[in-house]
Length: 391
Image (cartoon, rainbow, N blue to C red):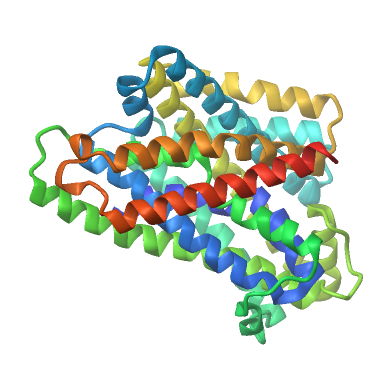
């Protein structure tokens, strides 16, 4: 059961998380660590519901939308879900391209093309067989985790980190960053993906469904707990090395430079390798999520390689037009924020319906918590979109 949860956890350690968490640490020290912990709790809850709907019904979230929503609404949900998948590609290509630039000095666009080609190679190494894909993803995650373990040990960044567990803010800008951290918790494409990875064959006995769901619950806690530790490591690392030091700027390049100045070239190399592993792993996860989206909403299936070529085109065009990498990351997060309510609301609706879920239907307290989380996260992301539109 750990494989699907590890695949999903990649979305919580993508290049967008690098930028948000390290900006928070460099500006405010460990003060916003409590926000990461809160966001991780929300992530565990949402992903458990996504997995639960697949276990209980034998169908994923896009399939349920197609079966129970009007055709026009289903097509609208499919369009926004595809935009979310493309926005995910944009973030991963930018992160991977920046990593290659840091490692080898390559310009952004050629580096992004290399990342795109590498994702195609990864799909060839781990094609439709899910287990092979999970193993490849786990290896990339290992590189990412080891990179931050090394940097954290070099910096001693966990010393004094508990001070950041006291809920507090430091003005309107810290509120904006806290909103970004929480808003980035719910990735719409992995809600669709996890509901598919959790599916069981029709006719599975209830006792087995309960047993599998318990195993999934444990694996989600382990995998997303690991993701939470990595995100906390990003923030505490920036707090220990960049906060009030003036080293580096608030960009991925700046963080790399600041870590090199503070901890030496080994730490800078570990950061770049972790960023590259994050970009490659996230790109693969986004492609598989896109396959689930098209198959579920439209009952259409295309080869993963063809889909990869189609979804990578718009992000590469944006980068070819000279879009600033940091601006591209911001753009991707805005699009992801737009898609969150369209994934959360159906998930809440289906898991609360006894006619679909049977004995595994949400309890009243679970539905109540889901309503609060759905409203809060959707509201925070709307707030981010409004701020971004206003510049």
